[in-house]
Amino acid sequence: MSANRPADAGRQMNPDRQGGHTVTGNRPVPEQSGLERPVLDVRNLIKTYGAGETAVHALRGVSLTVQRGDYVAIMGSSGSGKSTLMNILGCLDIPTSGRYLLDGVDVSRLSDRQLALVRNRRIGFVFQSFNLIPRTSALSNVELPLAYAGLKSAERRRRARAALALVGLADRENHEPNQLSGGQQQRVAVARALVTAPALVLADEPTGNLDTQSTADVLGVLDRLNRSGRTIVLITHEPDVAEHARRLIRLVDGRIVQDARQAPLPQPRHLAQAVDA
Image (cartoon, rainbow, N blue to C red):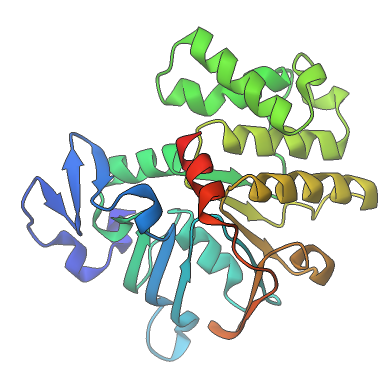
């Protein structure tokens, strides 16, 4: 990843200060308190692959802010730049230029180790493919991010059971993936995304492999999670899926061409409860 880091990211900095936040050990710490900052603050993101006449301009100056508790759908056809944007928002790729603050942290200035911590603790990923470990129980699959974070077994189990209960699968904790329907497997994946209490749930085509009923089940879970104060960014090409979001952003050729509010943000008291949870 460091080979592709923007040119200014390698400048020498005070070891205790990076990009507007404090670094304690290997963990980035934002300066603003939870409700004062947006979850996402993206400023003039540009992503170019290659150079010269063969250069591909995947993102052309994308800027957006996502407030805590919002539910944003990002739509676009193939080649629109939505997958590139998703990878950058998920700290899986870096922009050619521009700035990205995640929960108050300027991620462009983090080391690879710090980025791994951000992905583990601040972002909950839900992908089109469920990415569950076969021949492993739903409970153990949900526990996995907590194991990476170094939590003790009893605490992992407690949190994983609570996450499965949130998605309506408390009675399926001992089932392996091949014993679950597609919709149930995706709900296990959602529980895994929630188990670290991330600042952001990032869902990339989460219903792409599901039938109509399973799609409704998964979207119902996401709706309930957002109503409880979770911040969700969903990548989709399906209008009926995007209708569930509070805000719709449409990309064309690497640019935002539509940014429409479909429903109001939740009240601050609900957000405070979500931050405290």
